[in-house]
Length: 114
Image (cartoon, rainbow, N blue to C red; front, top):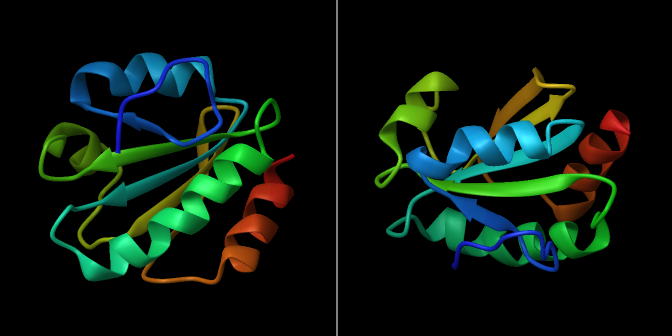
């Protein structure tokens, strides 16, 4: 996964250093996926996160945070397992879920933010 700027064709992978700026920029509606490179469940969720980022371009942001490289951001959201998805509207956490979920379930949660 690569860090991306305003091109939201794929999710924006952020680090502790870039998280706050990205979070503020896209805070209207966001899904933040906390993952780890060693996590097989996370790898299975990456295609869904990429598709949602493309489908919601201009409406909602999909951010991805590697918990091993960004421990501060992970702690800030109380992440204790991966993958964890945090749904945010107007800068406030609306819901947090952990584990593998069908893309459609994540889509419903994103839609509820819009």
